[in-house]
Amino acid sequence: MRTVYVNGDYLPENEARVSIFDRGFLMADGVYEVTSVLGGKLIDFDGHAVRLQRSLDALDMRNPISKEDLLDVHRELVRINEIDEGMVYLQITRGAPGDRDFAFPDPDETEPTVVLFTQNKPGLANSPAAKKGMKVISIDDIRWGRRDIKTVQLLYPSMGKMMAKKAGADDAWMIEDGFVTEGTSNNAYIVKGNKIITRALSNDILHGITRAAVLRFAREAQMEVEERNFTIDEAKEADEAFITSASTFVMPVVEIDGVSLGEGVPGRVAPRLREIYLEESLKKAV
Ligand code: PDD
Image (cartoon, rainbow, N blue to C red):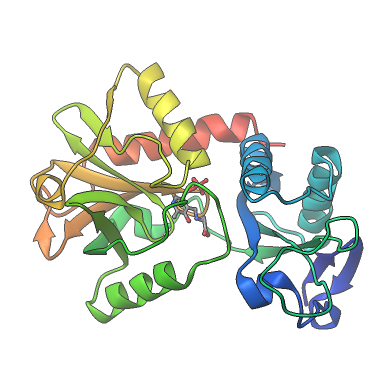
């Protein structure tokens, strides 16, 4: 049984409790982060801590835990649960004011809720899925306009994942005004010639921590990066495509809406970027 963290306590997962009045539960009034663990160490913890603060600031939510304490809790959970490869999930909500109200509670009276738990995923780095590549479908992006805030409001991405599964695919890329925004829980890229193309940062997409690292490594490796919108038709004609996220690192995409890319197997660029990403981020893992 896992040991999880709730508001300062380390507890067996079946003893951890959050109030029915918690605004995370009632209003999706909460933010989260997912940090991967490789070799028992946290990948890009700093990036996730910075984005967490950004999400909290955007929602006018108090951060109840310092970065140092947050790192300690992450490490302690990884240690107690003996995680070699996997993830740490962190969620902070605006807390439980003891009733339901659309207005935010007084932050001096209602403590934010902090929950962390681990997910054990042996073989995460050496994933067979990364060798095979994944299939995506395209769906409309009907999410709200502040996708740069990492809120727990994940119903539509969840539905998108189910639409993909129903269509025999692995995930969905979302389309707005004809252009790909991102995957249900990852950033989306295409490769044309030697150029890596991905949507530029804005309120329309999550500012992926993996994205930032991968683009940096790509540039350092003298690969050309173009941050601009691309259509799903352009994607279908690309040489390669891939996604990035903390839970998948770099994952090749080999099929879009039933159209095979290139030979229908992972190409040259995505597997290479995965290799570089894993190698470089392990060096800086904490
Ligand atoms: N998802 N875009 C969306 C909509 C996401 O939910 C995520 C992360 C990303 C990639 O961000 P990062 O590289 O920082 O993980 C992009 C996490 C992994 C999740 O919901 O499980």
